[in-house]
Length: 165
Image (cartoon, rainbow, N blue to C red):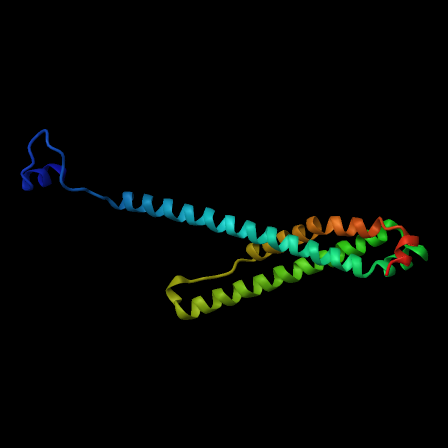
């Protein structure tokens, strides 16, 4: 192929080609590189979104601890253990994260449905493993970012907490 093109373009023996030959394998390789970069880019965006969401959950839970300081003091004064308070606030943070993850899954399922209706040749589906992974990540975000506020609530001195205004 190259020899025929060199003859047709009248290129001498030592001169460089004035054309370029691309095969389907070359194009597939370039396409693979582009999709790989897009995957990394989307993963970075998703990671940043998870970090921001986790920090948001932690801030909300810290405000909740501050607003409910008297309640925490009262519970501790009547016999609640540190672990009881810790579990309560961890469950609240986890439920908040799971609700956010559930909303995200619903948006993804709705988006996939809309794409499959408007562009049936793409055959979009949402796999159960993806939903399960999203749920596990949401659970992990809730626990990880809920530990500090929950520990702070559980460590409050009941006397100081009851005096808090």
